[in-house]
Amino acid sequence: MLTYGSVCSGIEAASVAWECLGFKPLWFSEIEPFPCAVLAHHWPDIPNNGDMTTLADRILNREIPAPDILVGGTPCQAFSVAGLRQSLNDDRGNLTLEMVRILNAIDTIRRQDGKQPAILVWENVPGVLSTKDNALGCFLGAIAGENIPIQPAGGKWTGAGFVSGQKRNIAWRTLDAQFFGVPQRRRRIFLVASAREDISVAKILFEPQSLRRNTEAFTKKEVDIVKTLTTRAGLRGNASVDTYIVVNGRQDPITSDIACPVDTQPNTNVLVEYEYLHVRRLTPLECERLQGFPDNHTRIPYRNKSANDCPDTPRYKAIGNSMAVPVMRWIGKRIMLAGN
Image: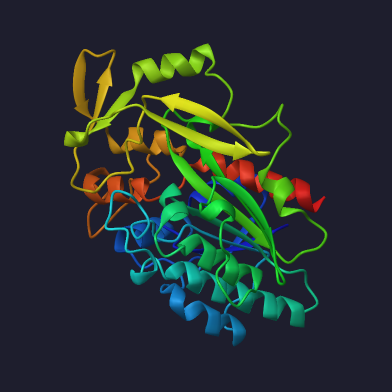
């Protein structure tokens, strides 16, 4: 049974995704009030250790255990094209480097205990590939154990790649949730890294060409979903965007008119158009389904109110900040296969 610790836990897409795989959470780390309430409601026996900047020292002091997997999606606002893109100059952006400190602490304790090094699973927006300060290169260099940032070949990071470093091997890949069974276009960078010599992080994230996702044409069912559930975010519009994923050195275009309905600012009106006839706001329940969560996962007792009176605003924000559950389940399955 694999164990994991979660940082920037949010409403725990990883736990929802990995429960059926038999993975066991040892601890969470979340500070936002509403996600903390969701964690306490669904996982009352799993400790929430709060501020992730305290975790490395506490792990080294053996106050909290060192798990097999460290998972988390550090705040994306510092890298997102929808924000100011202050990258590592933003305290939220610097949490990526704090995550490396936590990983190093975990591996130190596991080495002392005669255990295999941990596996890191990290998620973020594609904007991290193109920051002016080479944020991804700084993150990769720190994970790999280099003293300086890693520079991208050709001066620009691609949507998929592999780095072999002194300390760890690292693979990353852009995955789109729409190809994992949910009707929304949500491209994210997923990174897997480890010092383990018995597994290949590249094999966890990359597949043979005949099996890979993100490049196949829509099935009729998927086309019908997109036609029925077309979304747009308030005044921002919804232009079709060509995107690419690089696998084995080849770029494959993906074009879709369906935008991410929940990856918006909390005060943005999210609308849904059914067969182009009626326009209304997406409900929190629909947003949960778009992310692959169980119905009413975020409908909880909150601030002295019953679940029936749970406010919508924090639900929208928490769901939008989370990961797509089916993508995380796919990665969990790949980790299981790699270890066998």
